[in-house]
Image 1 (cartoon, helix red, strand yellow):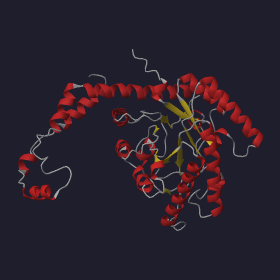
Image 2: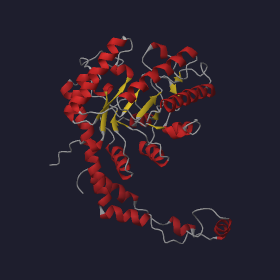
Image 3: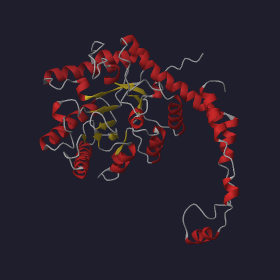
Image 4: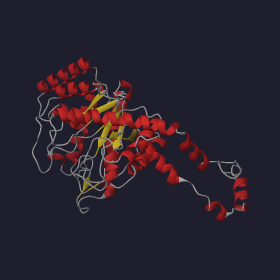
Length: 388
């Protein structure tokens, strides 16, 4: 039996906030004791993770003194050294403290916007010190409950101003760091700006340094909006903007559940893994998920191992799908090209356009062709069920 054990080359990472979740939710108190960042690094090393990511407040409580901060950083660095874990990504908590109740970069209060920039710059410095190459921005409070409170055009301009400012800061410091923007449609705000990956890709094109900024799409966030996550990731890959990715699972139409990867939608998870592997995505596979509230820390370890194991199982299934002669035969047939249209299509020319306008197509004959997608999908299901 294949063990499906994680290896460093798989680049599996978890955030301190994931395995460090105490099980608290809006209706119930914690069910697990809080662990320190050092303890969580050792837990992740035990289950075979490659790296650990952090919000600033996950690592260093917001009211820490300079002396406390220095001690925490020293202890964290030692834990990384002792375990061999790395820090590929860092991010800033711009949603938890009451100061961010009406947003951070889009707040109507200029003092809040300035404080948010300060908080990010301080943590960018720390993230780079710890080795991070990607910095994620999730605008957890960047939105509204009532559109009477904010003008969306002004809010977009404020967000752009903040990202431009921070790009210039990174360039000025000569840091080797890229930004990844993370979309979410709602929760904790009623409606959030740049609600999907497509929104983010459009926004990035308006920035002063778009080459520095990509996306960090998350399974659950796109599923909350009822979208096909693999399609969003495909668009990001095509644009060379997939700088980071958050893997978890989610029932469509629910609140943000952050389930173990592959728990709910195995077929969707399969096509996502296949996409990442087929296009040789080389960034972190970051699991932004939480163990059930029912679990103790042994259960948290099972959760973390399960995320990685499921990814590796689906990676193997994707390779099997790609090698299946019947599946590939169907794909070859439906994508067959006899070259007869090449004289009309491809790069535009006036001659091609004029010739195409004169071409006659036998619509009934073309439309009568069956595409065999039922059989293709059934074969896919059989690969996933382990009978092929």
